[in-house]
Length: 574
Image 1 (cartoon, rainbow, N blue to C red):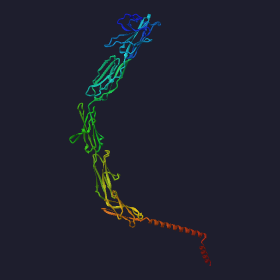
Image 2 (cartoon, rainbow, N blue to C red; image 1 turned 60 degrees about the vertical axis):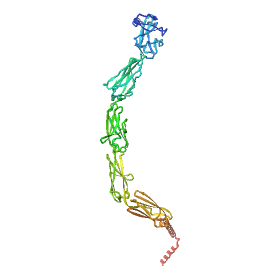
Image 3 (cartoon, rainbow, N blue to C red; image 1 turned 90 degrees about the horizontal axis):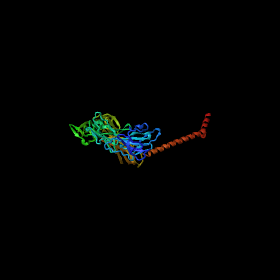
């Protein structure tokens, strides 16, 4: 049907659009031929229509296209027609279906809801103004969809340096327009790199782009991080979105192998637990084997080792554990072998010996020299200690002069290696001084009472060990410590014991010694005390009496004295 409000001019190759009569969207839309802008050029000088050159809208959103116009003399329009310009259809492209998606508001704004890819066309707004003619303008509607962050997938099984494939597809989904994919990889500029790309257009006419990176890898790529970037245009600006970074597991054969002793080889001593740790710089780790060279043969120790971790544990090592140990690696990919050896030295102290000159037994007053010797692969220090653990001297020799029974003791030579902490050994020697017994202590004198039970004590020192005899009967208990002997005799005091006392006799193979224990009656000291008190009292009485006589004489109370003086005077005067 003819368009309302304006006669359709004759124009070649018409496009088709939708028309609305009156302000807003009036009666149901009808399809009519779209006039070309050249056909309405004569009216453009009277009626001006303005529209944005480009409107960009996100896929699925609502597109709003404004149509503004000015009519000379503030005239009114008679019709507003909307058209879209056909473009060459893409193979398999569906025809845009605007049913239920178009609306025009009072501000002459065309709204297209739920925009699809097929809506990306040129939209024409044609305004009719009666006598002022008709005018039109057009807007290019562009539909875009921001790509999602691309997913990058690294090979789960890892890649060998013998392979040329880094299977890392980078796949951004759903972008529009078609994006560009770029790889950021730290490969050498000389590396041969191939990046094939696959583009798929979905039924929704959105693009799915898959880009894969193929290249040789080297052991230097083991710590490399890869990511891909998707570049796209939006509103005239170039934008991008990146994938998460990924690391590729690179498999490569070992080039170097190391073998070390833990703890430090210089600190290993007998009794230690030692680890031999073999490490290789390949990935995955190769298979480890251990050997010990003995003479011209190699003894296989692999059964004692952890072949996966490369650790050989040696428990409680001895002197004969020293030797040359070898670690051998086998790469299962290229069957390459590497080996490394290390010398294990187990430090030790052996043959600790103490010599005495002259040899024991020794006599009191003699001199003796103790000499200590030991064997070790490291420098040794010597120290002498007595039976109580006190240090008495340093060096290989200990000189003891003028020996006595008190000198008799156990001396120890302690041998240490300061360069190997904890490496030490000791040797003990007994220095025995011989002689006849010497009684050093008795319980005498001892004050006792008749029928009292008392303990008599006799202590002596001697070597060889002596015996103690008492000349009285009683219950005896002996205590021996080193060269000292102590005997306690429990007896009841009677008249004979109180009178004669007791005799302690100590004897050994070299002689005998004896001492007498005197028992005193406890009453004797009491009598002496009474006599002393009586004498003191008498002295006090005499002193008081003399004082009284002197006082009376001075007072003239003693007449006999005066009469004597008068008689003398009288006789003198005759």
